[in-house]
Amino acid sequence: MKIAIGSDHGGFALKKGILALLQVLGHDIEDVGCFDIESVDYPQLADAVCKKVIKGKAEKGILICGTGIGMSMAANKHDTIRAALCSEQYTARMSREHNDANVLCMGERVTGPGIAEEIVRTWLSTDFGGGRHLRRIELFS
Image 1: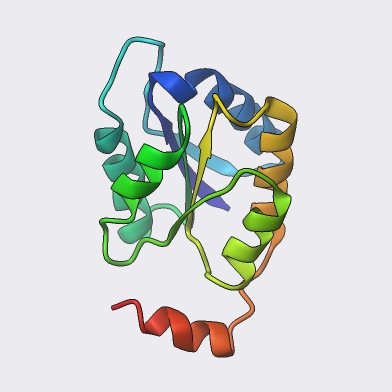
Image 2: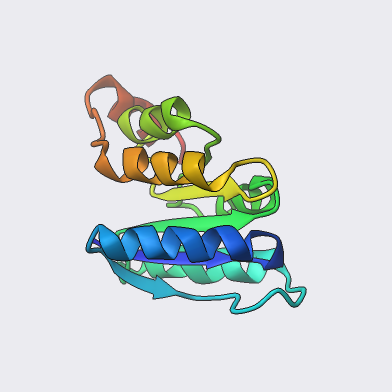
């Protein structure tokens, strides 16, 4: 699967770990930045990942900042993006199964690397349930 990933400086270390996991899982990854711990503006990274998903250049996106809140807010301004802030496996599964989330958001300062890896594994392996959930998603626009 083609996955676009981005982080700000507050999520840089966690992003490095998630990149390694995605490589082990065999995904095609596009890292849009940031590439060090120098301060950056997270909305720019959120936009870069979301544009990849919207244009079909990535099937899904992953965004990481300090808490995940800013990234999820910035991502959800895009009409066809359904970004979900997940802090454990249950919300990761439900965001895919019920909401067909196409962007996963996480926070490095609130989610440890082991839990983050389990979130990513769950999120990527869960299919959208469709049915009544699709009808509800169609009400978003």
